[in-house]
Image 1: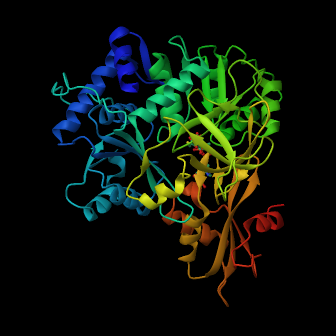
Image 2: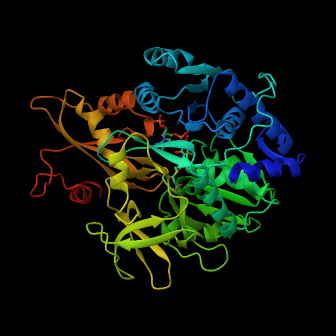
Image 3: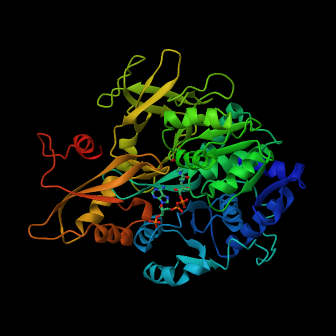
Length: 502
Ligand code: MLC
């Protein structure tokens, strides 16, 4: 399993550079193992037991990585949280998960203490001072973890990742040690990960993409990950052209920023072994623009929180524009009629369904949502529409579910609509994603005001930002008298998008 492979790397190549933040101290595999052991000792000293949820809301930093690996090491369930979540969202995640521990930035203490005070007593917080400058040397080496076996059961939960729902509050997807291992083994094979690789890591680490695909990918291979705490396009382009790196992974918004940063210059990045794009559709113009400007064909792949990676263009062979490639090793994919789950022939558009050892176990305390997520014969309903070409390549064709993707982050319109309906000037609303060159889609609120109310658009956006993470809040508000509705009275969002997103 992943933790076994990592332990082996740490034993066999203790002096090799494992991690380094730009401008920060180098961390060898030996030092990584020692820091994870210390963090595990600390969690044990707090009484954390197998199965307990350990949440972390931290900036991208070394302690986040250490506690992530340490929590999984002792059989606890690691729950990463986006630092952008405001108190109202955080309260929900902590109370729904029942996390025993929240590891947070001391700079957020004033904001977090009132939330923790509302939660049951056994839910505690540990604050880390200046986490981006700190390792875990402040922790005592108690050696209580030594000799304790690594988790052995592939069905044991390793991580819990919240995904929003189309009709419900966010759901915690339980990812097992077996899921993580299956995913990483499959990517290792498909993308040719090797110990000589140097990954330039620019993604956030509270999501599958940055945490599992990129970071676990590098550590599993015994490679080196150099991490940037934030996305600065000029700095990243300089690093990419320095020839120090072989692997780079990003979302299309990041690739767009790098491409724009290059402007009219041609910058040869063909020394990079692999540059991937995912978490949102890669626009055709960016695929071709990258080829012209950087002499690089991006490898597009398709995944989701519940599964990790499913489909990928090949490392060797044709990387097809607009396509997310073929099933990864160990993954099965099919296209079905979403109403009946009946398989469709090649070329027909239907729902993409997935099967494999990488598919998550279940949602936390939501058995009915888990049941809805799978077909009768055990395939995961992704909610994404697509088709399979006769030669095996898959192409995505929109979504069956009501979902907006902005900058690689998922936003579920019902969640934003609920927030909007709390505003006294709003009589009815519909949230849609309008196409946007930089972000992919832009969250747009269409509002029918209460009779006689004046709607201040900026105030509506600000109101949403108090309740939701900033990336979920509408960037644009459009006033309407009425919505197009179907015979059942349901708002026809596709029509609304067509009419308003021009
Ligand atoms: C930041 N902002 C966003 C946003 N990110 N708005 C909409 N969508 C987003 N994704 C807002 C900020 O709040 C700020 O608002 C304004 O945009 C400008 O901020 P910025 O400094 O320019 O943004 P930045 O911090 O640079 O963030 C942009 C980004 C980031 C692209 C680097 O969004 C990002 O890291 N995206 C990657 C997400 C990711 O890892 N997804 C993987 C999910 S896993 P204001 O108004 O306050 O100024 C998954 C599975 C899979 O999907 O298959 O991979």
